Image (cartoon, rainbow over all chains, first blue to last red; front, side, top):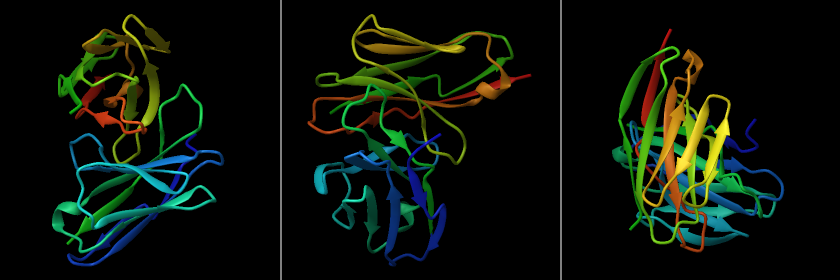
Length: 113
Length: 111
């Protein structure tokens, strides 16, 4: 059973609006990553936070931003939404030491109309 | 830039018919190769981590193997509940936990 919880599960926004997606990780998971998964594609790395600092970014514009909080929760913010931002957004967290891969949440399905 | 290619894109098998999924990769310094299972509309579920060529991992009807250029996910006597998309991902030496994923293999097991 996953220890990563995302909210909301579904969201519909209008082009040009802003959106905030939330993720709650397991206690002790210092690293959180966000991914975008378009329909029929594999997840694409957006960015990662380690101890509240950004620690790596994929090929996404600055209108994608994030925050990580001391209580192991995090946010993904997207400004000026575009139709192509419609996707499943996944949060993944990693414990300090583990042979398992990053653990993913169930995702937030964002639809931009 | 790290790259992952999975084949086939889709695979339909009869229940009990064994097969293999392929994951070819290029990476600058492999820290780990990961297999995940993803059901429609859900997040990926972790299956295996492989670290070095020659390594093998098993879980129920699944067995993952790794060479220097590719990984295979072998499915033995599959059941309908094994139907899902199987994703392969690599983690390179970026100094972070970034995963580079393939597009997945959509597996359907027919009763």
